[in-house]
Length: 507
Ligand code: SF4
Image (tube, rainbow, N blue to C red):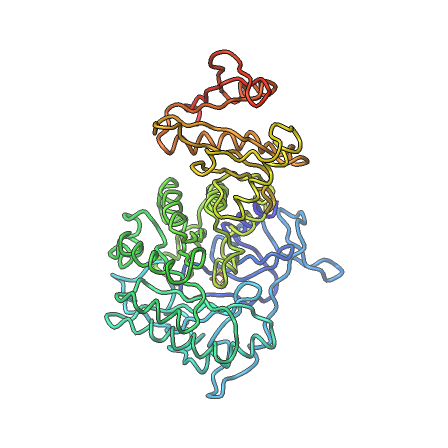
């Protein structure tokens, strides 16, 4: 599967013949270059020492087509992202365009607007970051002006069809003047083209600066905690550790209020020494707030304080991607909803590929809005009124207003539903019912998954006894899910039903 291949590539690296445009420095945690693998952009390690031992190689066949191969076996057509045309230009003040901004992924243009950081000293700096390395190598300039950025981005949009912008920056303390500079850059870019803009920054001391970014035309923001293990964070990013989870949470919540759910993100770097459970708990903490956890494997940048560290085990990354993507779907977060930035680009992570592959799985969760609720009711009507003729006009009753309506989603469509509601006068007893899966969609185990989600949902609400009146012909089906018959069968809506109780210890 493509997801497995990209996960391994990002951990093991890609051996490559010939020259390739690649990132050696820059802000953040990744060295490497972008390769299109079966039309999916993947930013992979190219020059770290361990890459020489990678089983993956990019080679050209006799006809000139390039392929990704593992252990000598061709896997996918793959090609190096071409050098963009805008790199050949210089600004009005005679700076090479490629020193102002670079092409990232397949269609993102990225710039570090202030290439210095107040914390760039051995005690304070983030040990994985290479922000000032490219300055030392002459690969960029210290500070990009709003006018330079607007000129370069307008040209890149015209010549190379870039479709979104990432602006990142070093932190300037105590003034935090990088926030004003980001806003000025965004406003000037938006004057020359209507391209979505994402900006990344350290939590600012003054939250009003977030409103200024929004007013300047910024569409999404990245406020990166990097790790939820504060022992690890104190070691690798002491300034971020000192801000603390509460400090991040305050800024994330304000940012979600201003920019909206799914438009706020944070890198979660895997492989800094943290526990697997900490990563998942942290991702859930963020997702609960509408913040997208952008999970990436740690990739040591040559020249940084962590240059000799290794990327994480691909098997760990696969487990994490699987769990995080399921979690994201349940919370309604998706990279496809991101307007701009790393979450939209996706090249430094394999999370987008897992999201795509997971679309073929059924996911069950409570309905989130009126249209999902209406779709659930339409399915109930199709099944109970039209198909089974249990009700003549409508199956909606007095329990619906207090019910949690759970839905099953498959390939972007709602295909099934079940409801749960508390028994009158009791917080610990819940009743389930109206389990319905659309005709033609009953091959995806949606019914089983809906029942399990209903059990999980009521248990989370403190339920101790969960019952349902089950049509007699479905009693065996529920027995296999651990439900037990209680008392004799009864006639309910003209058909024999059996009261059954769930074994909530199975959740
Ligand atoms: S994910 Fe972010 S850092 Fe990575 S290539 Fe894309 S824009 Fe650049």
